[in-house]
Length: 105
Image (tube, rainbow, N blue to C red; front, side):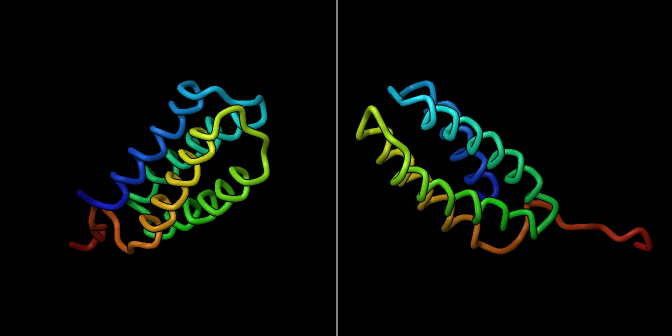
């Protein structure tokens, strides 16, 4: 399964995990917002190779936020750290899902 598809699945999980775990308001907002942005950039990364670097930045932010923002549940913190680590690794895999076709061919 291509890295962008896995990244999209992780982003969607992060979005929905905002509602699945008990969280503080800042943690809740961060989880759904980062999940939504990561999903958008994962889809863009399917055709634009450099869009994956936005998910690199988002995963780095997610690590910082998981460690800094107050959490109601240790499970939410560990979930965010695990998703951030997996997103970071997947965002470093080069390539896209589709090959670009030039107008001349």
